[in-house]
Length: 453
Image 1 (cartoon, helix red, strand yellow):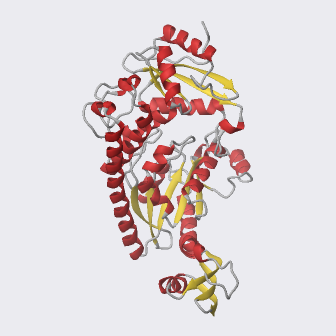
Image 2: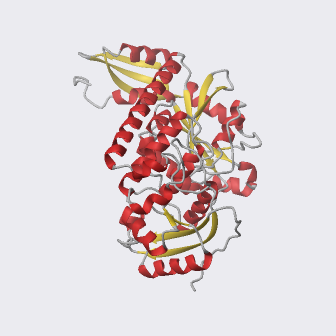
């Protein structure tokens, strides 16, 4: 009988889960995007926390190192036999892989393990958690779309075990099982044409949501109140920080993805300026592409924000890797050039020596705060205010004459140092608040004065 590395206490009520992780040595498979990734051990710990959030009871785990995934079962044939042996010994209900599996991988694994065992991958697990935490119609629509996109290539006989919920809508399964909550049991047997029709309807509904959000953002801009999007790795303390600085009551739990739907609160900054702070969904390594696409409307709150407040759990052993994952995701969303203020959260747990060490590291520009104990918040908000209103950034832009609103904005919010009329445009040099960089960067002067913008 093979030996697993970790044993866990169990309770009879929860589904029993066994975790499988693979370290892929080939750079092509380790990370095709080149993004930061956690070591296998840390990634498995994160997977265990995801399972806990989903309500699974972990009975053990195993790992394997491969050059590339096995084309049939992802793991090697010997590891499959080991998994079957553990199935007989531990009687688990669910096997959860730390990577995304292909439909073929799942079919072959389920055939080897038996029809009573559910095979889930990291993507399916995250989708399940999102389904549990969707509280609004928008969140439910986004989760359902992501689920259908994920299920579409997997609609085979072997997937009928996911039919655990009677009725549609995102929510917890009536039987208490973990699968892919949301569309309902009859939806799992419909053909691809009807799935495509449902996906089209969901995308249309979410496009209406996107338009509504755009209207709300336009109203906020007319009110001249800048928006700060709070971003960070999941469970870094974003919601707790928003509660602390805005005296709000946003749900804050020690779980991954405790908050899913964005929440916005008005905050008065130290010198009297107002700003809107929006809490957004947390990021995570190996974020499913289905979620990035489905949550376009929500993630636009990030891309359209005037500045970003990046919350880092500075006590986490992989804080630097987590912070890099967030930065990589922001770049993927097109928000990598925004003004970013970094909050090093949970700093109350650091010793003076640890603080001194961090002060010279890659996160040296961050501000130490404790959202729970409300320390360091005045310094943090002062930095936000400086970025939004007080700290002017040099810029040189070529604005077409028809962009009179931008010329007025530059003069009103910034400081014009030189203004040179051209045939079709005006060349402006000066300084503007950091929050306006995204607005003017498309007009940054990169051409000769006689060229068109």
